[in-house]
Length: 499
Image (cartoon, rainbow, N blue to C red; front, top):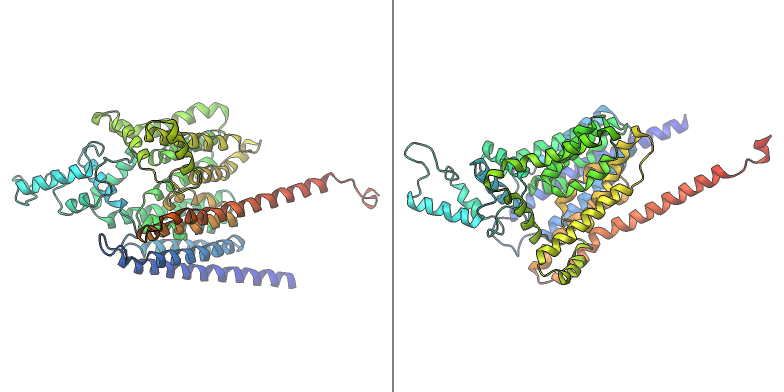
């Protein structure tokens, strides 16, 4: 009786930590939204409270990590799962009317979507050229946006388009987004016009769908569906996917959907959806060798073909504009990779001496790191039983993506949105520490505005060293525990047991 009472008390204490964590995270989301009022485009860069935002997000990350450990220990219930879903929605909805904090990428999304929705290629003209064309048409028509027949010229049906084109970062290069993303942007613009609110509503819908499907995946794996809060309650998500409106939440949605299909024996379909993820974010293609290991031999060819077809189909749509345009866009992206990780910068510096062209060197280093990440998936030890492989593949995917992101060229916080759903499968402290420390990235803006760029490596170290150290400790502890278990099982029976 006493032990049962103690367990019940511990369970109630864990749930109290969950409720308190949810309430505090809602407060953190509101505080971020309020602080975002100081982030107005083109105004007061030096006075922006970026340090305060980082402090709020770091505190929220710590609260989130504690709450996730409490959820992992709490008994699952339909009430807890419902609370997880509701709080996930509210955390995102709070950001619908906020100003993007230190981000302008969404202007590129809107312009690309508008051009694509007009039936044109976003890979042909730069935003600067688009803006010049809009200004020329406006001057020739006296600012009128309607033709005599009543229809508006493309991108002239709304005066906001000129503002969007003028605010795209790096207006001298065409789009670097792959075709599948262009289709997603075009769909949003077709429905909502050149509006960040339309993008946010789309991202919120993707967010809620991801949380629901992640809960279904966890239940499928006989884990607590409430662990979907690892994704749904993460400050990383309400900042990057909903405040800054990065598209990476859609990549997470594809990966969770593919994982659910993989564990439901729809394995060829899972590879097709993984192809959609790679179409939205080409770097996720490193998962293919690992995922193919979950398929029976007779399904390897169909699975690979399904993946390739899903990747290639969006590119086919853009063939009339020139077959090289989308591929040239990927090469253009390589020119603008910004190292925020410990390995890519030094490797890039080494490659610079071996190649005359800087872009070629970056592409070679990026390809080598992708190959290394794929190799991690090939050598990762999987169970011998076929029915046990899909869950192990999902856990291994977490390792592959973490290696790629930390070592590769895109170790920006929003890229970790792809990794986060996989953390929910086994939320150990080092994984939670990795996600919680990512807001430190935004201190680089403070350093740049105050002439302190030389300390950027300190920020990078603070972001990723806790994960590396805690991960090494966790691995060492697990190896010792496993070794002790093998020693005990190999020990001879005592005389008393023999009798």
